[in-house]
Image (cartoon, rainbow, N blue to C red; front, side, top):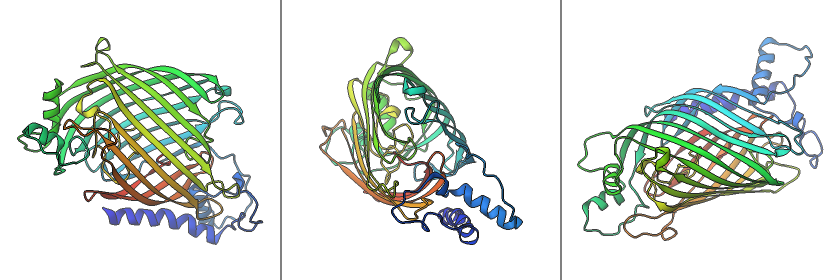
Length: 428
């Protein structure tokens, strides 16, 4: 499998690069070094394929340049240790519903995919800003057959216990279980701008999980033990409720920000009157800060990310516990498989250094490090035990109109966890 990924990487990388050497000049490197790159002088994968096409046809005619579309239609190729190798089709796009000087870019994505672990997913997501950012509407819908790796609850610590069930749930040996289930999910949030960059809003979420089971033969599993201790149906349940939100946003681009801040605070309230199996309250926080390190090389950036989910009251179902890879796009915790650590409350932070390798921004690199912590049922508190990870990666500019990058990362953590992570757009 890894050999196929290596072939894929060199195929993607070498085609545009070869065309660049044969056909075009790097109009940026021929200019004075203190000149800021313009949009026309950026080079992405689409330019590479166009140059290859012209070279094959030996077309020396001058053609009128069309305005670059903000929509990318592409194979939905992905890989990480949690899902295996993914194939499918994906459409991502971005547009401005007002003048870009006072209106943020609106983005959308839709895809269908299948992975070598048997996961089938179809989704539609959007993040829409109206003119002058007066309103922000974000949300999406998902239908999926999921296969999720499971390593129990907590941080893998070895606190002794006389209760066999708690030993299985805490899983200090980091034994691997595989959970399978079907999920139907819908969520929508509506924000109103109060001050420039500041929004408040509310939303609704509906999550139906069905056909839940742990594959293989086991005397006890973390899923079954937790469900028994908390009174959840281990085979199916609903998690529905309302959300109240506060958001602050000054970042210049949602796909690959060069500067600014993004902050989002959400109170999720699972409520039985809306069909939820149990009532629970969870406070979620998402904070991202970007420092642009050079005006001459705008994609030279230092970025920070915090994501947290804190239990306020009640108990979540096992499959809804916050943890590694449990953010909206399953990007937190590169270096570990999704769900490797989890608890009633969870805290995560990451620092990433992004640097250009070519002045036309076609190729750039990153190095990153992250830490995460969670509580468990054996007395370990949040912030008491931390688990680190780190990695490095390459970025290929896929669509310069929306700053969409093809991201190839290799990350490693503890307990022998490591792997290749391939996908579109930055992790944050």
